[in-house]
Image (cartoon, rainbow, N blue to C red; front, side, top):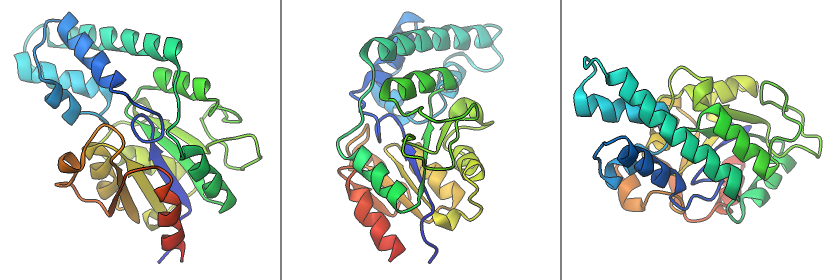
Length: 244
């Protein structure tokens, strides 16, 4: 079995604390633009590209052929992005307990760290900045050499790829940027069904689901995964076992 050379982590709900803020921002945008959809339906689309969520909702509501389809999608998306950006600018972001210890362990083992997210680039940058995780990243959001200052090696947002989750594009772009060719050298951790689906599509070595984020075991158990964890620090033992 190949040793783990790249650890990919989702952001909100996996490494960054999520108290349902994203879901609330979705719900506010939906109410403000006269849509009706359940919180359960919104939650089922967490992890997707955010514009895709509104495209899907409005397609179901009025159909792709409706003359106002594109306008309605943009109105809802604009309201959502404004609310979301304002939230993170004002409130900031915090990592879950144990996340930084996992990152430190990965760096000590020479394992590159990539963050993927269904967020678009602007709000991703706000969160990285609030956390201080953007240190030493270049204009391509990369830092391939751990120099004692950087926290992560790579940041991938949904707006950096053609297809967001559940497609494997973000994982594959992270691999490309981190110079990893073999998906069997990659471990992926995420808290949504789309995280698990993208890991399966990318054929990674080991797919881990987070039970401390936005989804329960009941909501994740019908998707393919290798292990579920209840706290981030458990990733260290998983990596140790994979590396022998």
